[in-house]
Figure 1 (cartoon, helix red, strand yellow):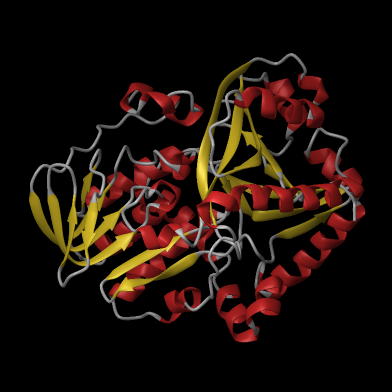
Figure 2 (cartoon, rainbow, N blue to C red):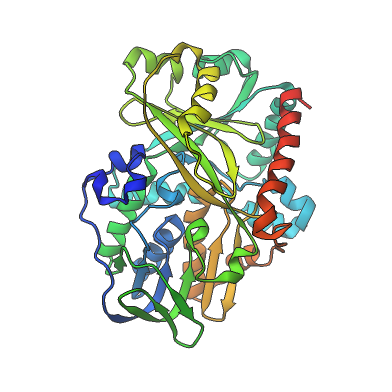
Length: 431
């Protein structure tokens, strides 16, 4: 495969340019029937369809563009455990029972990804280990508490890093400490998505690209119409996230698309690589609007950060992110940037995922709020459990209350930006 297999506006992505060779899937141009129709070819849809196809269900997956075209093929590629709000916050807001149930699942998504990579021999540059980097004493204290919480929940692969220890791993003087999670890690996310799509096909599932869902008729069976065909299904899963458009208008009220920006350098020398990230861990800082970075499989530095509320595409991603990169790694001043792009994720007011039912046979899963690589893979397993008649874990998420974004889609972006400015000021002041 070459990057030309993707829509022109996506070619600037490093992932699209370095994707594994594969044959694109065909467009749906007929009427078909199945057990489950999955709308969306990102990680939520792929994980769901793969679990179901493995269990013997007849599955049809519809992707409006190309597999992994949305956030699943454009993100930082970091395997970060838990959710965008950790279990202690969940307990304060929703009670002990909910926290215990969600807490029992926070490390499951990363293991699912590793199992998939091994089972289907997916070539996606898996590397183990992720670092949360503290920029001040307050953040370091929070990491100490996070370590204690995660160890109580069963993660024994954590190491608290002091200033000297993090300097050994990250070639920057910005950080006062950190927390290493060896059960975290990083991947080439688009190649992961392509590998999962191929696994669905190998298990008898049908995958169609360039086949956007135009409408979903809430009937029994349900009917999903595309430009040239339709799918009649016992069950439908809506998994379009920030790229769903207007197929289910009710879902738009509960969330807001946001953009994150990423740049990738030219290939680094082995000496440069070793001085930046000695053990090839991925890193994210602890700011409210965090920066994240890692090395790619061909020794480039991939660096991302910030949030554009409302998911506008910035005119010049490089000018937004390169100063952040140079601030962290001043030794790379003057480095060539070969790729820059943006990708949209879906944010909820609570910052927790939204799972639920639109009808008895029409389900949705969305709104991972920037924490989706691992949680989407967990989500797919939970949806497959529902179809098999085991809904307890899915319902633990479905029962979470979700308030519409304040001001609706029109005013949610500026209001969120104001709130982010407040928290960013606190980060700069270390309070």
